[in-house]
Image 1 (cartoon, rainbow, N blue to C red):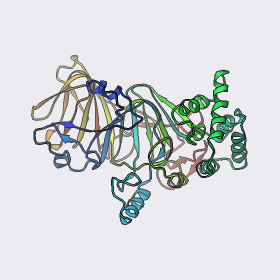
Image 2 (cartoon, rainbow, N blue to C red):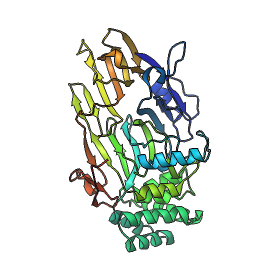
Image 3 (cartoon, one colour):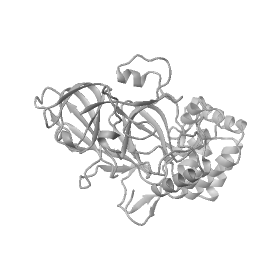
Image 4 (tube, one colour):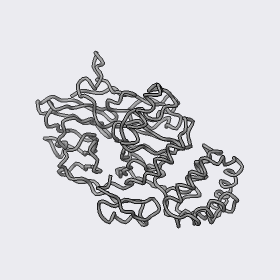
Length: 421
């Protein structure tokens, strides 16, 4: 077992206090957005040893990337590509000679990026399109020329494809700052009057405080606002438009950094790529209902081959320690208290909140002792039971009817070939 030294990311949207406090460090006043745990080449972990050996030298390339994320302001409006799009885009940019770390590069690896967020604090995010009727309700309440025009367009072409065309119009038409300001002021007046439609208006006002002239403020009106309480998780498949708003979470994903952005950011945009990704159809957006492992562990396994998350509580009530779910490769981070890990050879490793470690095949079974909580990122056994996913793009959060159907983003199910992803 090895303690890890992990890469950090100081993006402008990061919190100045949440991650430093989580790590037991003093904030320095600058935003700290992410801690990366894994072997991704743009932010690889190293072993916390005098030799500073890269984690990949003992683990090989891990198929997942594990993050601590803390946001004080909205992240970019974005989607992640499918495997096919990622492979094609990566090859195209490689052949064009775009450096891997170039700011304008979109595809930094040839992998898709399904991901799951597990809330450590109350965590707010925008994910997936509202149903057509709900978007029309939102727009109907906003008495500005732009809102009326968008409503007319969507009534003429309802459903998922009509919503995509509306987003494409907003991204390509050159919407003026005065038009965006007028919509925001109308939303502000409605909120002050105690009127809102499922938090659409208050969200636009909140985002505009950071990005007053960004068309992403208008697009936010079309998106569902989801709040996760600590201990809740949501899964986002490739092609789900989203923008995290505020809070701290653990993120686990396929080992990729491919992001197509269309607003709410200072980074380069790729609106055409985002629209193309959306046109391929929506994937799953769902709350993840955990499966129990023993008495002390919840397993969040969203039916992807690259990753699962196990959250384990330990206390002195179990003096022999709590067995963690078996895995040949695992990264464990302490999310509360102080614990001690013991592997199959009897080796001990202490973790305080914010500490992380790697255990490999030679470590065998790993137990956690002490009073605290740990979260384990790992690749699940292909035969392991998957957690129940409760789809969120159906009205009322109804469950998916059956596998082999996916949501078309407008609140209607459409038939697809093969299993859902």
